[in-house]
Length: 95
Image 1 (cartoon, rainbow, N blue to C red):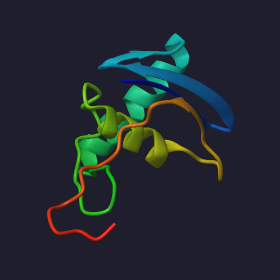
Image 2: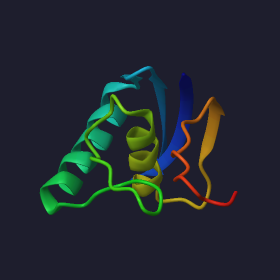
Image 3: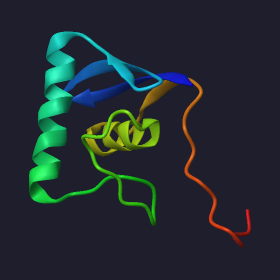
């Protein structure tokens, strides 16, 4: 699975590519998101869809990385391409 995501941080767009645990971006964008994820972890802040608590620094997990990007985004819009990870549906859930 692979996807690209463009988010806004510090008033500027930053593009990331996640491909089976490997994250690619320019050095500045990568360090900016890593620093934000580390700060979230230090604060004990988790990321993830409602009902899930994922480590913001666990970028091997596509859902954790996507969730971290969504949390760090400062704009109303996020641009994505590719196949986005979806949270598991709990047993007995009505969808």
